[in-house]
Length: 125
Image 1 (tube, rainbow, N blue to C red):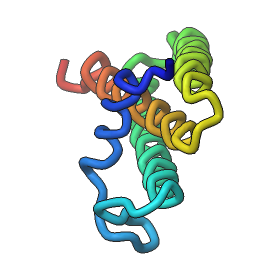
Image 2: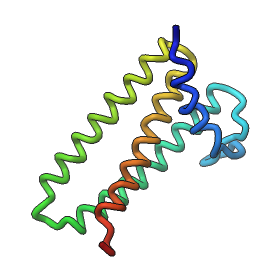
Image 3: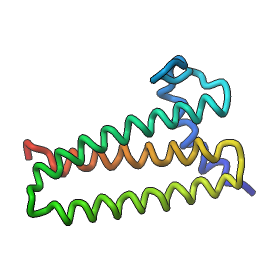
Image 4: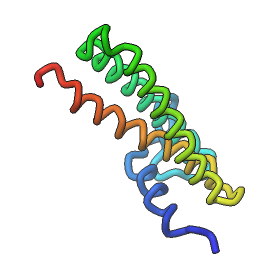
C-alpha cells in the first residue's frame, strides 16, 4: 500500500501558498502536475536564496575561525536533505507526484534550515 497519508501534508504544504501562474508566480489552485512542479521548483529556488543569505550572515557572525567547521556543517546538512528527500521521492513509487514531493521536501527543509541559522546566528544575540 502506498503511503498516501504521509504524503498528504507535503501536498498541502505546496498548495496553500500558491498564486496565479506567471513568471515567478504560481497558479492557485494548481491545475496540473506541471503547475505543482513549477511552483515547487520556484519555492525551492526562493528557499535556496534565503538559505544563502542566512548562511552568509551566519559565516559573518561566526567569524573566520569557524569557517571550515561551518562549511563542513553546510555540506553535511545538504547531504542529509538529499537523503531525506530521496526517501520521500522513492515512496511515491514512480507516481506523478514524486517530483513535486521531492521539490517540496527540499524547499521545506531548506526553509527550516534558513530559520534555524537566523535564530542561532542572530546578530542581536
